[in-house]
Image (cartoon, rainbow, N blue to C red; front, side, top):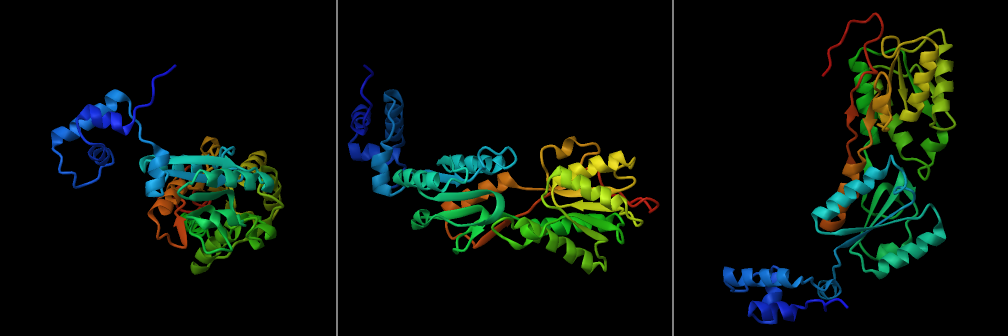
Length: 348
């Protein structure tokens, strides 16, 4: 049989102090009036005995358990959105908190069970996350304590952390304008369902809004806006082939996500066109494959790790704003250049 677990009384006895004094030292409470040497005796005794504080008892006193629940639909098993969890884990660790992660796969029955199990552990708060940026229905059970929505909004007035999709649309339009593209900028990925139903997507409408407003401010409008049933490579491929059949072929294509851009690359290559010499391509998300394309794809990156970190900070710090937008940095790579025949433009 293993030895009995060391208690606070054992530490106090080894250090030659009262149990109260030893407790105050170990918990970092001020005003103990104990010498530095006495503090060292307590820490040494705790280490020698392998003492670990009784977290359950401490949580009863402090009403804190140093645990955070992370509840998501399919974030944990999605490679692309895994950064949300990495960022939250790092931030929780820095605050001496543990992240309890559960994934529901969209199963409402399992979600109720999982949330009950998590709340039974008296977590200090809940991060409720979505893989795709959208509006969620928040389970009433988690509303009794601190909640932060991650990559999502809700009908309830809850703090939420979102990527700045509109700002990314602005940056992408500014980039093309900066290279001299004006009259022949095409867009691939219009989708009315994504744009009109916030429970499906918040990103589509925000990205489009940023692009249009920036171009309009420069006196420019999109040459054509191609609709796609989904944001998948095959739809980007089909839309690009249709663009190339036009007499006024675009000088630049904005894709609403990287998967559409992958299809655009394929169609342009089959047509014997070179990116960016013949047509520039720019996109959103920074999928892991984007930097492996040739030429490497310029794209506005989803800041998933920063978003996960921000969610933990808002949860633990309290006084959270209604909405926290995290900038989407533009990865300037090799897929954008000045239109053919236009003067070269120097960019960092």
